[in-house]
Image (cartoon, rainbow, N blue to C red; front, side):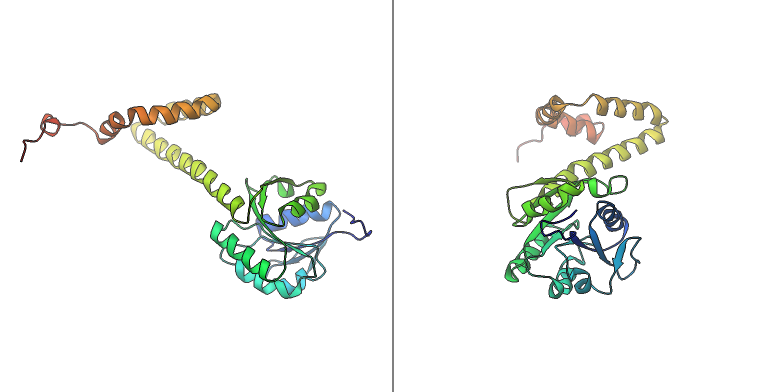
Length: 246
């Protein structure tokens, strides 16, 4: 991508692990100049390898922090001295909304535009085209820079932390569903009926639509008491009998 001043877009990628290296590769293929830094991984073909966060950030129009939630704040503080005036910092780490707000506060104090970015699917197989949510004062600009390169970005009207919050809310559903399926299949395997249950689960997932959500929510509320008894196992007559008044 070439900017209006006829200069190629310069993007720094901090963290060249699985996600960062794939995104950096796609950025290079799209025509951006990519500067990378990772203390443990060498930069791939077409990426300028640097010796620190600040060195990578130097000359960059956009910095992508793709390391870890634990390293997000330290990476920003280490990279900030190298930022050019007006450079945008985007944090793509799976961090809590609180960490994203902390980063936004540091950025605001330093006069740095900031985007909270949540990647909503695994990066392998998608690379730069992984669906992303972006919030914060730099979200619109983030989308404006990367969408022409092929990125799939939904801009949310809200502060940093909003994108992270929505990703975590969706994760409650996906991870909870995954845990339920795995646990149910383990029980079915022990009972000798794993294949039957596997086919039943697959059929239910394939047939699911918007009505399925309402059916699950309404049905759970309506039948909660009965299901609790069923899950508890057989109830003895003595247990069902009312207790005498004290």
